Each structure stands twice: as C-alpha cells, then as structure tokens.
Amino acid sequence: MAAHLRHLVQLLRSPTSKSPSSEAVAHIGALHDRTVPKQTEKMLACRKGCSHCCSQMVVVTAPEAFYVAAQLRKRPETAGAVAAIARETGRLTLEERLGRNIFCPLLSDAICSIYAARPLGCRGFVSTNLEACIAAFTRGETPNIPMPNDSISVLYACRMLLLAALRLAGLKDGVYEMNSAVAAALSAPDAEAQWLAGKDLFSGLQETPPPPPQFEASIRQMMAYVAPTI
Ligand code: SF4
Image (cartoon, rainbow, N blue to C red):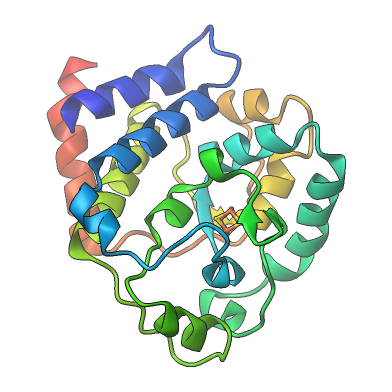
C-alpha cells in the first residue's frame, strides 16, 4: 500500500506528464483489477452487456473525471450528451437518482464505451445476483445487492489510496457526481492543467459527504506513514 501511495503521489506531481490524472487513475484501476482474487471474480453475475447498474449515480474524484474526459475529447456527441444529462443528474442525491432509469451517457449498446478508463466506483460495483440488480435498478425496489467481501475491501482500499495520494500531492480530494464532474473537466482544453495549478473547476458542484470516521482514520494513517518518505 505504501509503495503504491508513493507512486501515485509521484504520478500526480509529475511535471513532465501530459495528464498526471490519467496516469494516476490508470495505475489505481489496474491495481484494483489485479488485486480482486480470481476466485471472487468467478462468483460474480456481472457479464459484458449487462448494464442494469449503469443507471445509478456514479461518484468520482477530479482525476477520474479528467481521465473519463480524456476519452471523450474526440467524441463530441458523447461529450455533449454528458453535459446535457449532467444538468439533471448533477442535482440529484444518490437516493433521488435510484429508480429514475437515467442511464449513463457512456453506455453504447449496453456496453461501457470507456470500459478501460471507467472510474473506481464502476470497477468495484459488482453483484453475485442478477435478480437483485434487476429488482433494484429496473423495478426500483430497495437495493440489496450482494457483493463479495473481497470486492468491497479492494474497492475501499483503492479509494482510500487515491484520496490519500491527492491530499499528499496537495490537491483537492472532493468527490462529485460523474456526469457533472466530467462536463466540468471538458469545459476547457487545459482544464486539467488549471486544476493542477490550483483552480477549483468543480467548485459549483455538489460534493458527496466526507468519508466516514473509520475510513478517514485509515486515510490519515496511510498519509502519516508515507509522508516522511516522499
Ligand atoms: S462509466 Fe461505464 S461502467 Fe460506469 S456507469 Fe457509465 S457505462 Fe456504466
């Protein structure tokens, strides 16, 4: 964990990278995917072309938004669809979004069109029961999605690493609704450079509540361990 945290901070602070965000998020995404045990993956009901969960709210950090935005620079129609839908989804809470059947504008024929660059929340949201997903996301019943403990642990660990890295790099660690954050990230060609230089491009967006105390304590512990060595 410490080695990955140090590496993430270096990536985020890189003076030579064209997109420090993309490199950091690609690193944490790959780490996530190779850390989930193969045995756990075999338990999942998730399959290519199954997109029931892509109607719920996805939340992202700024680097994740920049990484998604980078995939859309040459896809103006999709970028426009994200900006249009953001006007609605950016105002909804997690609970309000459930059952509205507002599908992610990045879906194409029920497949994620930015699959390799999808945010951590999408990577880590898995289910062992398709019927539970249909009940929650299609019929609007109270969500009760069974997720393997290993999947939850890996997602939480990666999320904590990314938040800790952002703080150690001196960057804002806000978490925002994906469509509105990606629309903000697409608002200028040099949006990422502006954000890295300290401009808060996401200031008008609704932020999710801060991490729960136990999560926050782990982030601080990681930061305290690594800070003297970076
Ligand atoms: S980014 Fe991809 S995986 Fe995530 S909600 Fe959108 S289509 Fe689904």
